[in-house]
Image (cartoon, rainbow, N blue to C red; front, top):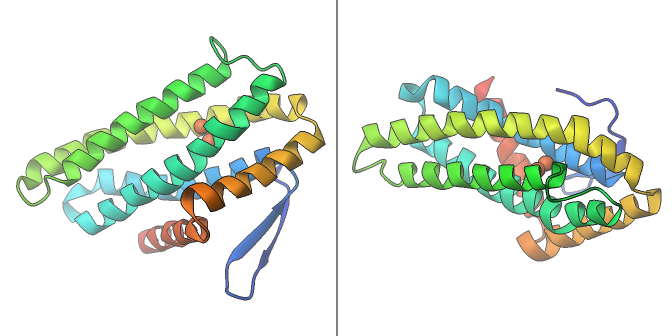
Length: 202
Ligand SMILES: [Fe+2]
Ligand SMILES: [Fe+2]
């Protein structure tokens, strides 16, 4: 799904990495959503045809979800983006931010259960498959709706509440988060994993 309202110029750097120059923090987050959706499509295929799904692909998809979707993307929202929205008057408790935080936690629960199921792969493959498929489906349903709510509702509210200066400052803090919390180059590593998983589905 392409989002035409996303404004960025992208270029390929000398070492082949894709580099975006976003105008707004919400555009950077939307771009993350498009990458996450690629891996959700892979996860959907794994849940639809579990007999032909290798544990290696489950492992790669789960690694992406834990590190890119959660550590990189959800933590950027929780530590940087949501607090900025609160400062600009968007309520947390009983409002959209509180709901998004609850959904992040719910997602983490499914991810923990998927990881526990994956750990059973050798010892009890049937139990592993059931745990992966059931929790994978629940995660998919949750995250697709969550992304939709953020793109359509919260980010629209954010674009109205934040000044252009706020958006620029947030972009700078996102970059800092990626370097300090997950390490330089890790974002790109997971973009490549998303592409690889996506390519192997088509
Ligand atoms: Fe979120
Ligand atoms: Fe998000």
